[in-house]
Amino acid sequence: MPDWNPALYLHFAPQRTRPAAELLARVPLVSVREVVDLGCGPGNSTALLAQRYASARVLGLDSSGAMVERARALVPQAVFRHQDLRAWLDATEQGAGSEPAPELIFANATLQWVDGHERLLPRLFASLAPGGVLAVQMPDNLHEPAHRLMRELARLPRFAPHLADAPSARTPLLAPDAYYDLLAAPSARAVEVDVWRTTYLHSMESPDAIVQWFLATGLRPFVAALPAALQGDFVDAYRARIADACPARADGRHLLAFPRLFILAKRMP
Image (cartoon, rainbow, N blue to C red; front, side, top):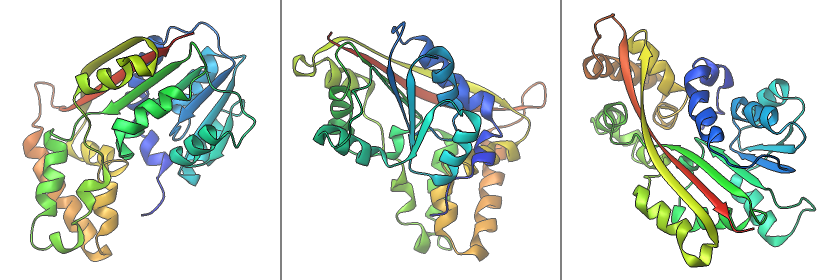
């Protein structure tokens, strides 16, 4: 699959950064020494972390080289690494590095691309320093029209031969109470677990703007898997369906409903 496009992703930077800011506002840590931003993307979430914890070492990790390059330019005071989340976690658990355990692990709009949450979330939580916090935000929108339409189009005869695997690129989330149980179990050694869900209604100027939003994220696996001759047809068909699913409102703009799941868990001191 082609690398991520930081410029396209940041075209909607205020909307994409808002959940990260609201998640960070709920983190109870006043000061920390080590922060890890998992799936830091182009650095918009890392910038928030570096601003709040100015004296901390902030490490941003991302599997996209293009995203890491953009993040380095945006947040020069942070440390960035082109590294897969699982590779970092494996190295941390094996003690392969000399880095101290982080007091804050922050994962904004990242873990929905990683499977095996039943094991992944407890592993991340166990990687925290005593008294540390795991802060997670994930899009919870696979059942929204925007994603249902992708899957419906992928089943059409002209597209289906190329898109059998595309819908599985995103990991279906567990129920919110399942995440609570994973981290609140006595074996997890959590002091506090907080799980909540928020639906944002993003005001978009046109159906095409909604398509551009998803071309930077959810549509990537679908478009990338198609032959070049079919990519434009798929996007055009998707745009037409989005126009029906997200009609103009009273002011002529279009609302994109976007549910997100938030998780905060604090480890025992």
